[in-house]
Amino acid sequence: MSRPAVIVSQSGAVTPGLRAVVSASGDDVVETVTVDRPEDNRYYLSPPTLDRVETLCDGLEATEPRVVVDGTVHPGQMVDLGERLPSAVLRDRRGAVLERLGETNPAAATRFELRRIRVARRAAARDQRDGAADAPSGESGRLAEHDERRGRLRERLDDRQREARRRVNDAYADVDGRVVLLARGDGAAATEIWGALTGDDAEPAAGRPARATTATAAVGPHTVAVTDAPGVIAAEGFPAWFADAVPGVVAALERADLVLCSGVDPDGLVAALAERFDGTHEAVAATPEAVRARVTDVFGAADYVVRLPYGDDAQALLSELHESTAVADVIYGDAVTVRLTVSRSAAESLVRRVEAVGGTARPADATD
Image (cartoon, rainbow, N blue to C red; front, side):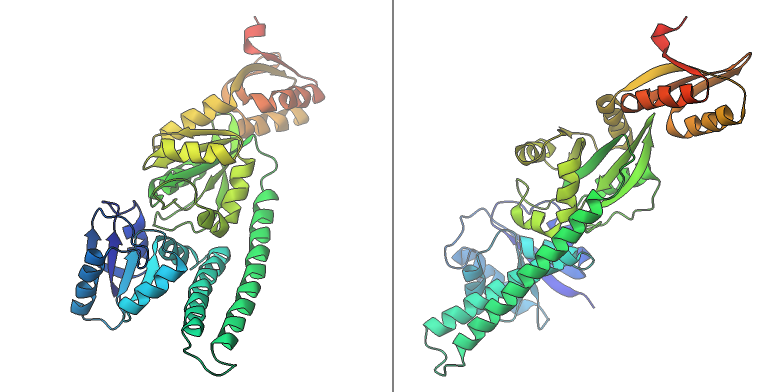
């Protein structure tokens, strides 16, 4: 049974993708409170906004309604907000996203638990400061437990981040290039493009994929490793908490030759990524045709005329060329003449392979 949820935004609009993530987590968004007010130092929500949310929660027929604050709420503010909304399950924007990603992403799940421990520790520290526990084993003991738990989670997160990065770095070495598809928002359009390029089944959904997912795609003469990533649900930038949760995506971005950004404000996402990662970062229309065109342009291609002798080795190479290049035509005469387009990065290898079976390969503009 779904739980009623209220999303609260004080920026004048809900961050793109947040409602979809909350719904995908199994909650029923019954109300969206959207105002344009500054952050309150204590509760994050302004007094009028908080009063409205309290009234909404009291009117919901649920023991634990979910309140999702569309912003980055400090642990201390989260503790104070919890005192005002004791019946509600509270999440800020990053908490809602981390919880959804953490359903199938171990790094995100650990990052989410770290966030919960920080809030719990802040509550324990406040209780201790206010003299709520008189016994030495009271709140001071709880603080020590939280600190120990936080240290273990930090170590676990480091391990899971290393494993995710290793998995990405060790994969797909024999490709012409690496492409990452990244969107601001729920990322569904990028997932549809990824599926169209790679031929893999991918069900577009908010918070899915929950981590870097890579497969090869043939784009003209190019064989590229294409990585799909969860959408960036943040008003701007590439948040550190998101990077912590998707270390495989970070590793893919570090190795990418081309990053194509789509969704809401793709130019802003391009600028944020360019500050942190090398490679080419571009905004692109969210269609397979647009992505194919950019991959072809960026990686470049060369037209060649190949002449092969008759024989088993040459025939085997011809079969391989049909797989690894874009063959335009094949003419059988005193030799087998093949007109094809090859990725520039693979042109030298093509010439070597053809000469190894006794054939020749020349750029098309250098032949008669």
